[in-house]
Length: 340
Image (cartoon, rainbow, N blue to C red; front, side, top):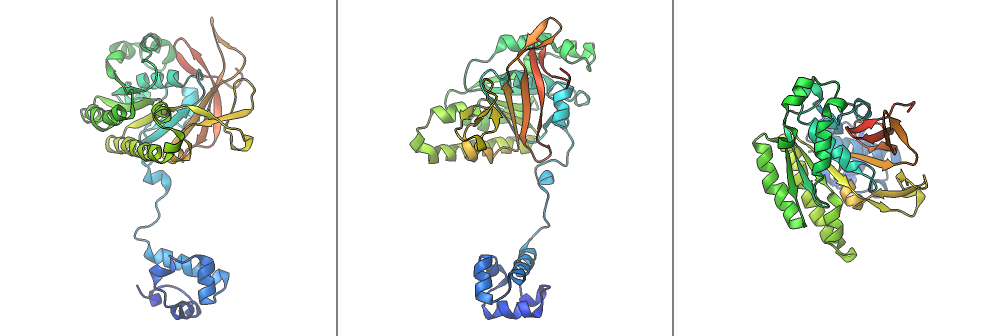
């Protein structure tokens, strides 16, 4: 590509030709160095770089919302209209969503609820398929899942009772256990794709993503840990894109000592003391980051009481930062109204 093809002032073209730089070569030089070599002003240098970048671009810029599958309005409801309102309909049909928080915050409770929500038809916020739940920590909470199933008619008052009774919820939740990283990689690269390809599931849950990556490596092994973490996240993104499947990853938290770097308030002190585990390497792989924590006090609903929780949007390309209160009840996780 010749400089004469660019819409630049002849003075700028003459200056850059004296430097014997091609259009592509200009983009490899920093702005201060290019200004020093060409003798151009700062504004002329910026204009030169902008014109060169535009000329070398193969395709027009694509907004992040479109490049990540957001041209579809399809969302997976989390089973509560108040929390769905916070998430603008629920979890995106494509992409990796992280839900982090301290132990007892209600992360697994919400994940189990989504495993049931995905089984409803799309008109009720589901994807009309099952879910695969990959457990890397404790044994799978079967008894709590059964309790949530029994409470669906109470939780999902928007769904006809006849439809709820016709769904065999427990038969469509596929449970996988991964005790080490090798079995986890085997699961997401072989067994889960089979379930997705057969149309048996449309949701992948990993609880938790941090457990194995924290326990299988020493602090000095951070480079190898990050390499395997990126390999794992690439497999999740591939599954999500290939099968238009939401991926929900439960994450642990780690203590932080600088309040300026903290993200959430501690349940005991109300001051920020924790942040999601696995650092920046993992954060860059997540499209939506949610945090959930348990607060002090008690909220009531009928004959039930619960410690208040809060679900917070930390970042997402389509969501504003904000949060809503919630409670964990026998029938599931419900958002709290502003007056609750």
